[in-house]
Length: 242
Image (tube, rainbow, N blue to C red):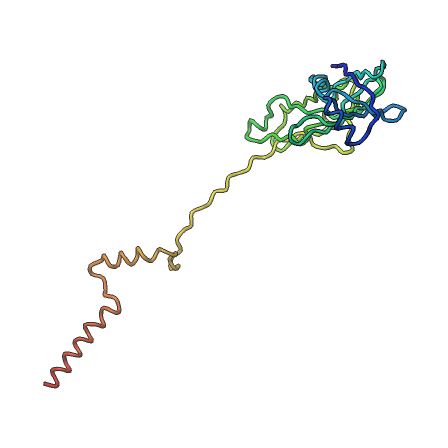
């Protein structure tokens, strides 16, 4: 496992004022937890810290912290960054013993192509990290999950995985790590059939009216027949007066 050296110095001042003064000097405040003593307040170079964890293990990189001529084995546990500049503002370290296991979170990486994906299913990762218990120098870089035999509707639980050598998976419930979901079927809308005698849909009356007008032998509308009849009756009245 990767192990890098980081130099630190003890600091006395606490609070925002001393922290600002440290940052103006290119350093950041940090705290070392663990062990049988009280937490140790130190200062470190953020650039040196970022370089020290540029390994495949990333945050799980085992660090040798040099402090006042002594050395401590630590893991980089927590940190605070500026929301705008993304620069490190504060760091927390956990002191570890090389012969005592620690709990860390290790990322999940899938391998192979699931059978269910070939059949049209969708592979989903339900757990991107797994809590692992291991000695500090046995912490794995990743947890490989082979999904080759995973069919549609099937899943892989954490209890089915084989932990790397020297490691144990820690979990309270047997949760799902990966599964192949059933593909969603597209909804097909059937065409609406015409019902005999049913009222025409809105906008359907106009073409019907046009068709009637185009038919030369069609019967006249109700209003059209009344006008000539009224004229004929008026003419008859005039004839009677003469």
